[in-house]
Amino acid sequence: MIPKCSPCNTAQQKGAQTGFTLVETMVAGLVLIMVMSGIGRMTTSAVAGGGNLEERRRIEEAIENHIQLVQQADSLLTYDRIPSLHRTGEEGITRACRKPAEYLGTVLSQGGAINTGEWLVNQTEEDSGSSVSEINENSDERVQLVPAFEDPSITTSAIDTNYLHDNDKAILQISYSFEAPESNIGIETRELQLSPNFQSYCPPYEAVNP
Image 1 (cartoon, rainbow, N blue to C red):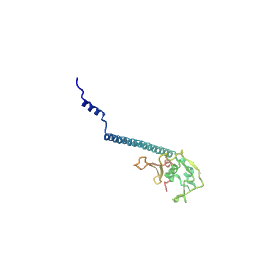
Image 2: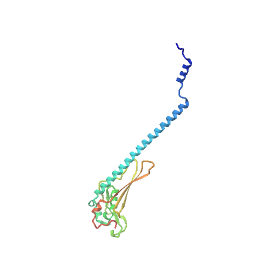
Image 3: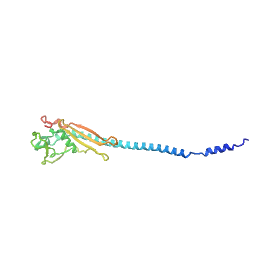
């Protein structure tokens, strides 16, 4: 029979009872905190990035829908739909065919409608080339020329819509401006250019912006 080794048993018991030291525990805790902080930052960035993408999708969708409505309105605004007063130029009103881009921009900016008395009225005779400065109050009928629509908008972001006309070239430019959802981008713009559809049906003697 082999005698038991008391010193050996004592060393084994001490080894089994020995745990992590305070320093080891603190280091392990610090590493765990760093790892969890990194995961938290990644999660926050992922959530913020997902929110930015969703917001951008809503903005782009609102602008795209408005562009489609504008193009539809332009195709529907034929020469025959224009009020007779705006075609003939009676009562000193500028004929739509003289300023087609501006006329189209006026209709679009008012959601497809126009007040017959609020279209451009010359100060003097039309062929004098004078600047436009008055409003004809004798005829104030509001006419819906194409199906009504509104400028693009969403509750979370502002979209500024501007209608800029170039009568010399008969081009209407529609500009959409908005604050990018991402913090490091700033203001973004989208642009659309239109040549008024009704202009091709104007009488051949009409001149653009004489």
